[in-house]
Image 1: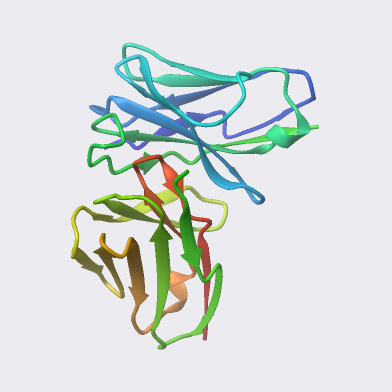
Image 2: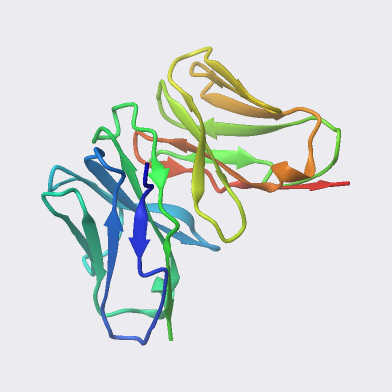
Length: 116
Length: 107
């Protein structure tokens, strides 16, 4: 069974640019959530999508956005990149959406973004 | 605001020793999750604890949950080098993760 696939794995951007990251969940999983991991702030929740709808959102500025397609694949976009956006961006999928459910998360390998 | 606090944040152990990692959280939740992250890798689900008093064991790791005390523990028995990693607890109510405990097991 294929796991969660994230692309690209590594990317370098400059300040002011935008970036789009992609996540393909495990087959049959309808929930995709995104996280930012940095040494200083740890793991922080960005947003969760279930059946193409954003169900939950973390405390990030509007420059961070996402969407989910009918095949459950998800993308996140960061516009007007800042140095502080350098991080490992992790995507996770689960069978059920909404955090009140028993949603064990299966994580992808992550996309490591460096902003220069 | 939900807070999830792990301690210790850094743990250096000798092989063969036992130790416990603690995870305290600040709001009512009847489920808690433990994940493992190897350096440069992603997170792997270890345990899903779904009710008060839940105890789960996998190899040298055992996790428990006390929802009344808002406390979960991850106990390591007879540590081996392969357990070296960072361990995170998470409360899914708010998708809040602890800061992680970086465990190093030395020969």
